[in-house]
Length: 387
Ligand SMILES: NC(=O)c1ccc[n+]([C@@H]2O[C@H](COP(=O)([O-])OP(=O)(O)OC[C@H]3O[C@@H](n4cnc5c(N)ncnc54)[C@H](O)[C@@H]3O)[C@@H](O)[C@H]2O)c1
Ligand SMILES: [Fe+2]
Image (cartoon, rainbow, N blue to C red; front, side, top):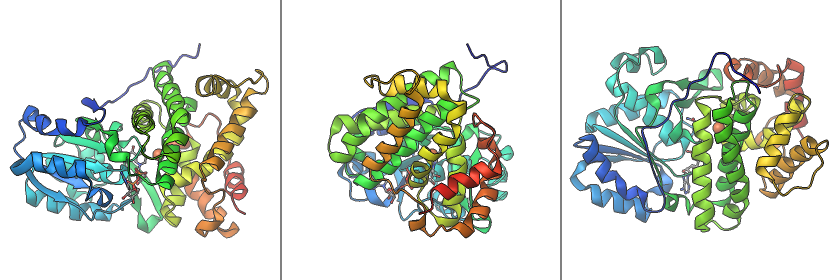
C-alpha cells in the first residue's frame, strides 16, 4: 500500500443541498446565516430561467440586487468592477449561479469584502486574506468545474497571456446547492466539454502524486459516475437522471481538487486558455488522451484501477488494460465531438515553444504529475495536437 508520510488535508464546503428543487432552500439558508440581504451573481444564460425567477421572487426584499453581464473566463482586472458594485449593493451574503467563471468571481469578491488589504493588492496576494469571507452559496449550472467544491479561483492574466489559480481556504463555499434543473438547458457542446473537465479532475486527481486513499475513493467514484452519464446527458439534455448524476459527479471530482489536485492536463491547458482563449473544458478534453499516453509507462497500475472502476464490464486482460483504457478515453472524446486538434483555434508550430515555456511554469500542477515531464515531452504533446 502506498503511504503518504506527510499525511493530507482536505477543505470542503460547509453544507450541501442537492436534487431537483434544492434551489428553493436558499431563502432558508439566508435565515440560518442571519443574513439580511443577498446579492446574486448570475450567468447571462440563466437570466430567463424560470427556476431562477422563482428564487428571485421568493427572496423578495432580501435580494439586494442581481448582477448580470459578468465576464466568462474572467480576467483579474475584471474583479474590481464586480467588487465595487457588490460593495455598493451592501449584501451580507453572496449567491453565485453559473459556471466556474461566475463562481470563481464570487469567491474572490466574498473574500475581498471582508479583507480590504487583499482587495487593495489587486486581488493578487491571498496571504492577506486573514478574516472569514462573506458567506457564499454556490449554485453550479454547468457540470462542470466543481468550483463549488474547491478553494481555488482561476483568472486570466492578460499581460502574461496566462491563466493562473488563486487558492485560499476562504474561497471555499459556505453552501453548495446542486439543482440539476438549472443544467437541463445546457447545450450539447457545453455539456460535453464541461463534463470532460469534470472527468479530467477525477482522473487527474486519481493519478496525482498527492493522491491518497481518501481522495481516490472520491475520484474513482466521480470518474465512474461521469462516464456512465456524460453521453446520455449529451444525447438528451432533458435526461433528468443523467443531469443529476453529472452534477454530483462534477461536485465529487471538485472535492478531490483540494486534497490531491490536477496534473499535466490542466498544466498544459492553462497557456491554451491564456493566449488562445480556448474554453477551459475544451482545452482539457483535447489534451487528456495525449497526456494519458505520455504518462502511460508510469501509470499502468493506476490505469488498470481506473478501468476497473469506470468500465467494470470491459473484458480486457490485465496486460492490455492500460492501453485499452487510453483508447477508450480517446474514443469517448471523439464520440462527444470534442475537437481533435488545436489548429482550428489558431495554434501553429511556431507557438509550441511559447506554450511549452508557459506550461513549464505551472509547477504547482506539473510537480504533482506522476512522471516528471521534460520540456521535449511537453512540446511533443502540443505537436501531436497540430493537424
Ligand atoms: N475554481 C475551480 O476550482 C475551477 C476548476 C476548473 C475550472 N475553473 C474555471 O472555470 C471557468 C470555466 O467554467 P465552466 O466550464 O463552468 O464554464 P463558464 O462558467 O465559463 O461558462 C461557459 C458557458 O456556458 C454558459 N452556461 C453556463 N451555464 C449554463 C446553462 N445552465 N445553460 C446554458 N448555458 C450555460 C455560460 O453562459 C458560458 O457561455 C474557467 O475560467 C476555468 O478556468 C475553475
Ligand atoms: Fe478544470
